[in-house]
Image 1 (cartoon, one colour):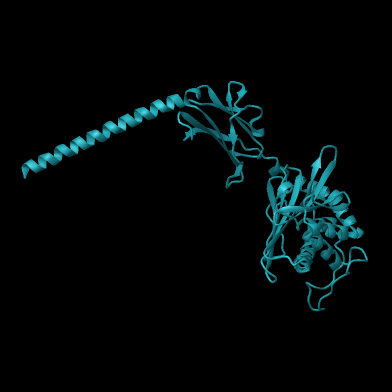
Image 2 (spheres, rainbow, N blue to C red; image 1 turned 30 degrees about the horizontal axis):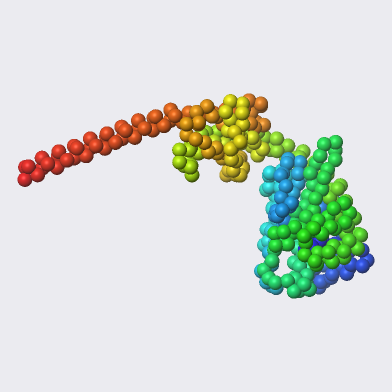
Length: 375
């Protein structure tokens, strides 16, 4: 609801929307941030104006990201009636391409190609429009909290964007969340409340659906402008988006909660892009007990994964870890578990260490006794 209000507010600031809306809000003539401005002529600018309002995931808000998927996120926190902050970012696939900090209306470009095919003038227009949008969003949400007697603090999250599909088609999305739980979405041409949304969301969507001008603008931005912008980004960032980095893999063991068991650990690191398949195998048979952790980012923007298997110690022989990744050209990495040999070497090292320690103690004792005899 907050995102929708913010979009309406920004539209009102530009004079857009239905006549039933409150119309443009005008500030003092000397205040450039409050002066009424004509609607932005750049469709991409209007698109980013809308999607910058949107949240980090909750429930269905977080979907797997692919290379042709643009996801714009926003988190807005309202601590009390006078303090609020909003931060946003945009991801193309797994890469963060733009950011928006609370202390500045300027969009930060995190990749040299993040402007896509937009001109400098179009981005300048977008920066000015974002300033209007953020003021409208914060003001409308504070009015909304007062109307519903909403307790502070609370958080608004939104996620919007589109994903390119085969056959020159695309699929768009626009979700809003309150306190981390999805409450509404824009589907087709209308606002739809989530099935278990609070009672007031129904009232909100009913009012928003009466504003046909804003709904038509959203349709155009989600279905036309967003795919066009994504195609421009894919072309501009082609060399980076298509890079391939081979993974490295190694095996180790850890403590198991069951006596007589081994926790086999397969670690895979340094791979790019993110999609990877890792499995403990016995011959060609996948081991059902394989447990996969989260795929985590490395500092160099590659990825790391840890996969484990808890087995009876005597059954560890013959197991292997198999890794599949697009950078390997169909040649899987296969590492065989050789824990029995490793255990023998560890036992030998421990034995030699013990003998060395005993020898050192015996030598020290002899020298100490000789010194006492002299005295």
